[in-house]
Length: 66
Image (cartoon, rainbow, N blue to C red; front, side, top):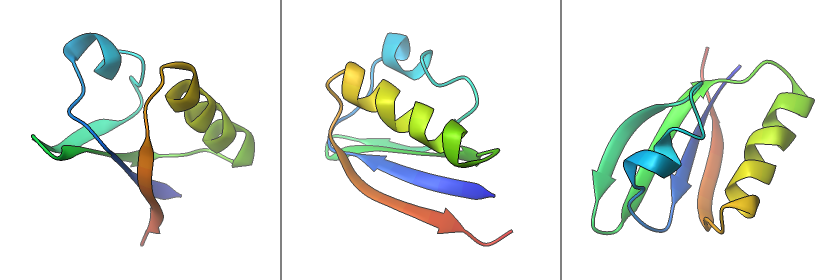
């Protein structure tokens, strides 16, 4: 499964490093979009927890076609 995550603000290089399994598809003043393979529900929950722990606001999440 592949997912795309859109965050409410641009991410620093340090914050991006917290998500090594995700690639950046867009960064602009309005936010950052990351995408990548998610192994299972536990992996997805872990990614979402990292967003929360870093204080990042997730504004969109959707599954991409395989």
